[in-house]
Structure formats: structure tokens, C-alpha cells
Amino acid sequence: MAGRIFGLLLLAAVSIAPVAAADEATPMAGFILGRPCAEAGRVGECPLKWADAMVFRSMQGKIYDIDLAASGIKQERLDEAYGLEVELYGKVSVAGRESRVAIAQLNIVKPPGSREFFKG
Image (cartoon, rainbow, N blue to C red; front, side, top):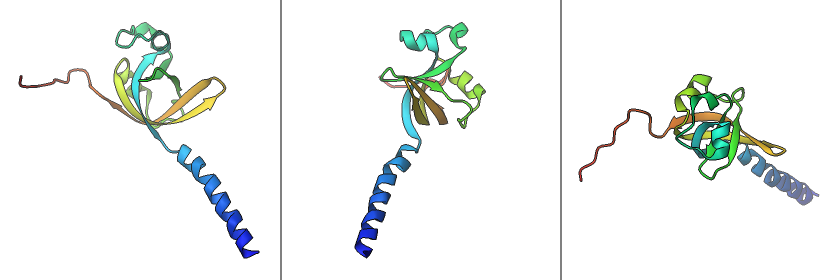
């Protein structure tokens, strides 16, 4: 009887472990763009008038709506990153055909005005 209870507890612990791992923030790389630019693949040439619905477009081309209410960042930080390459940590949720990301941390890869120096 004790072996059976131990086996059930072990099975329950193993089945819960993947759920806990899926709830962690995932590192992702891509761009913060307006939806029309992201869908057209226009990285680096997105006019500001198309920034109304900002989305995250991964390097693989997957588009995620940004769940700002569940994110740990503010709208101003998204405005700073608009049109730029970013690295973020976020939790992805899928509802039907739409994917959303709640951003925990957002880092701009090459901020505007940064210089690169090299000897050649």
C-alpha cells in the first residue's frame, strides 16, 4: 500500500514539473514593430503612423501581441524600443490562433546613438 501511494505521489510530481517549467520567462530575440510592418516583414522601415498596435516579431518571423497589462514594463519602454532589435524575457500564452507575450524584461540590442569602434 505504501509503495502504491509513493508511486502515485511520484507520478503527480513528474506531471506537475513541466507545467512549472512552462510558466517561467523565456528569452526571445526580435523586434518591436507596428502590426502592419510585422506582418509585411518590414523590419527597420516601419513608419511611426503604424505604431498604434505594437507587437513583438521574433527572429523566426512569429508575431506576438504584447500583453502590457501583465508585463513588468511600461508603454514608454516599448516606445523607446520601437523599430529596434530587442532581447526580452517573457511568458508566452496562446489563445486560439493568437499568441501573446507578457514581457518581464526588455533590453535594446543596439540603442540609437551607440557607436562601434574597431581597428582594421
